[in-house]
Image 1 (cartoon, rainbow, N blue to C red):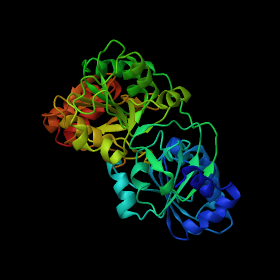
Image 2: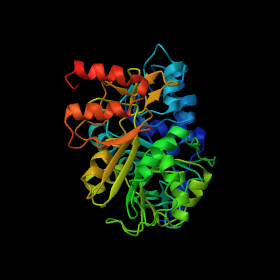
Image 3: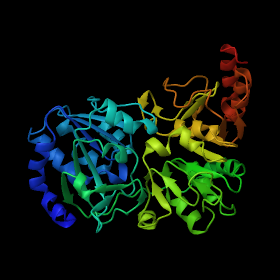
Image 4: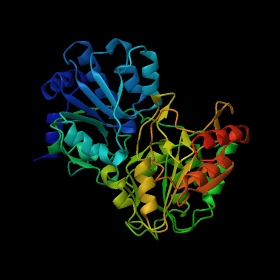
Length: 441
């Protein structure tokens, strides 16, 4: 088979792609979109056009971390109730879409820990069609999933229809990120710059929290860093460390600087030495250019990267993630705000469990002690939304600007007392009263 001839045969213009789409996807079927940077804006527009013309009715749309393109084309008031959007992890664009479409709360949330999403979308949800952005085809007929192996690397093998949006700005990455032209049903080309996410510089509170965590990271440790000001600040404080490794759900800009300086080299990893393992990447153009054709950067499905049994294979694993609130027993809420989904379960619990199971592993949950300019305590008597991201049995270190505590081995009254000391002083007395009312005082 001549790969170039096969490519031309499967290449469509946006107008003709709409006709092809209707042969691959029918009413009431399941369409799965790649997440975040790999979410294909050109193909999304084609789908939106078909729905507007009533050519596709009541399809089920599954995805994680919606983009601006998704918000502006599919998650619009015009299309409310014409299809069923089901987010497994929500972004600011998803939240904005919900707000703009009130009182129609038609965007549904699907709870799932990240390492199980690939299984969810191939075993429990039949993948009728999968769409993603990829790098251009190489001379052997292979495209690369680039920034997003995550659930895409799992779904793309099981989907009945596979449609690609080729973008020369998508980096070519290694690992389990390849898809051959023979496995593809249709292609469009759309060479627009990739979505970029600007990480806000850490505030003073972030730096205070990050310093406490950085002090407990040793030379030779392997890192996982989540999203947020504190994980980014921790990376910025590791310039004097040596021989760190990377096995992380997220590959982010702060990691590039540490790899280029030699601080992160993977020399002492127990598993996949010298390889910087990730499942999704979000950042700026510098990040994407650094990833391109870099054999040390390897992407694998979240079903593998985030599997606690895999995570624990690296000794000295350190996991750093953020939270919305923690209750006096040590339960963590990292996904719900004011009773509504804010983000998602994601991979936090995967790494909380995997890091602690690692030999000499450590798991840190970081949060500011207050929210809304100090008017609300984030150390709470009970989780306000009732959603538990990390159980009290799983939580290890909790860190605020007022200190760091290891909850492992502490009784409920001991935990309560320790966590109250991490709260802002303005709220400690009230928390002590609540603790006594719960029998924790």
